Length: 311
Image (cartoon, rainbow, N blue to C red):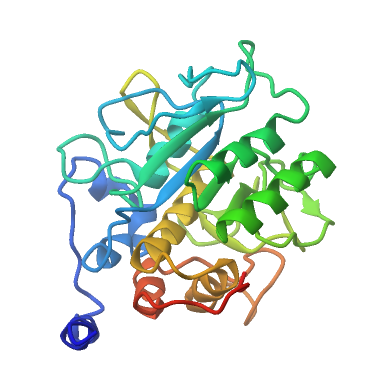
């Protein structure tokens, strides 16, 4: 316990402007990292120990994703998790591409582990119940953060909600979903343990195709976002599915600093330290705003035991 005193004192004296760049070739053009203040957060935490389940089309093993664990294909019932398309690999890269290896850019949590959970069949379609089964498998295999391919609210039916409830209860973590890319107003309600992420453009205005409304919790940059492709190359895409994994990376940093915190405290930390956009407080276009990774890590207490039952 005595060691915590100088550690806390050191954290308190770090300049808010200090940054710890990875030096990777695409980092300078990764504007979302600066808006999230990820390089400033890396001076304190890089996400080591956090496990992010990418419940999606699979994740292909590429050089910039060395932290790729052995996953599961819930459709085929085996460990074949190579990407059936591209979506899962891009998502994984935005969240946790390795930083400092001279390749591409860096994920928001560059030292985190990616747990691939493929929920698509050979044709790229998601069978009924696959999202639920993927969430359950991820919860039983060490994930604290789930990046669920279920954009908007139309994919959050009863079966998926069963999986979400199981994941949150078993892991005391969070499930993130993208708001979707139709520019529609969503009429649903927030689901416990679910963080819905919309997108903003370079002017920090709502990206016109980003869905918005009552279920929205946070936003992040959604245009010109670099991601890892299944063939090992890099490309820029415009989608809320690139905003969502960036926010997942922030949660990975929080859980890495203190694995003992639960869902409620983690979301409170990220929401309360977010940079507000639009009208003061929560609003339908920006939620609580853009997460500030540095502020979130600083606001996360050192590891201590929580009261039993906190979620």
